[in-house]
Length: 467
Ligand code: NAD
Image (cartoon, rainbow, N blue to C red; front, side, top):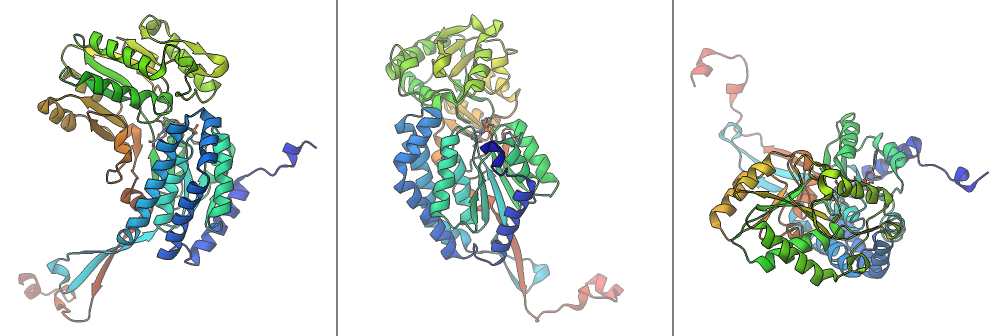
């Protein structure tokens, strides 16, 4: 018999046993104490500190992710998230006293956060270390037992996560299940107290439908087409560098909040295109396919998907920069396209790769209608010095998050919720929002035996009505 056949598959029965084991442990109260939560957060930090190079190597192996990007955008961000939770946990766990009403006088009330129970985290391949462990920080901080299912599309990081969590964390309450659709489906059949999913909207719908069977709440961290509006009243060099950084320095465009397309005016477009081209050459040289500072496309499926967007008849004549590919190395050069038709494929699905189309309008204000005519994006960006334009952007554009005069970096601000709206997601996390995402806010009203008004008790006499 082949060794694969001997290998036990993780099916619904296995998944059910796993959930039962975690439920039994959760019921002992083990995960609820402040001390347990702190010990696990410290263990996560230690694991990251001790294995930084191994983690960066795994990310390089899965995505050719440059060391600097791995350290800054996955490892350092995870550590910062962990440190924030360690610092704030006592405060987050403290019940919040709230006012009561005259109807309940005399009384006092508080909101007591309690863990939800046993939760499932399903993560994606593009930031496979950060996106796996950042939600786990929230789950632990809130006192839950948790199962993490990393993405099979980043297999080296997935198995490293399994090994490191087994070595460092409390395995009676924190487990990793590796696998793809079959394993995730087996997990989704179970009753969870929360499911936290990061990935595309098609699978997001599968997750939500599975959760609905058990009335399980979900957080869905999805994607979308995040636009960048570029006005002419800007510091062009700074704006250009920040747009390029958001697009190509974050995993070569394979990031949920990467600029998906630019909108600028017809008059300003030539100047912007020149600046983008010049700065791209400063970043990646004359032969970007050879650059070590760009991640590769994750696999041949995504390479074929991106090639299809680029090769569509409607857009192939619109390339103003880049367009080179090397299938054997899964590389596509940073590519800029100008005036692509709105009904093209590239303008109707999330690009999630190194292609950047530019749409043009007569007046910059028209951009807001273009954005609002599509599905609500995960992020939207504007570059302008014009105060009125900034205000209009903030008031009229609906997206998970907005940034004025930069791209992407809002995700590093723990005091801001990170999540989508409409098709870009349900719920949010980061900082205290992560703790809240995995907590139930229990309403508690305290009464004593004094002040027992007879008004509320029968018989309901007319006299009582007049009071
Ligand atoms: P992916 O292919 O890694 O899938 C995500 C998870 O879903 C994986 O763990 C996978 O095993 C599981 N999965 C896949 N098919 C499934 C099925 N049929 N049934 C059950 N589970 C299944 O990642 P992806 O979806 O390619 O990720 C890219 C998408 O995720 C983009 O749309 C991107 O914008 C979005 N994203 C969002 C965020 C965010 O924080 N909002 C972060 C990263 C990526």
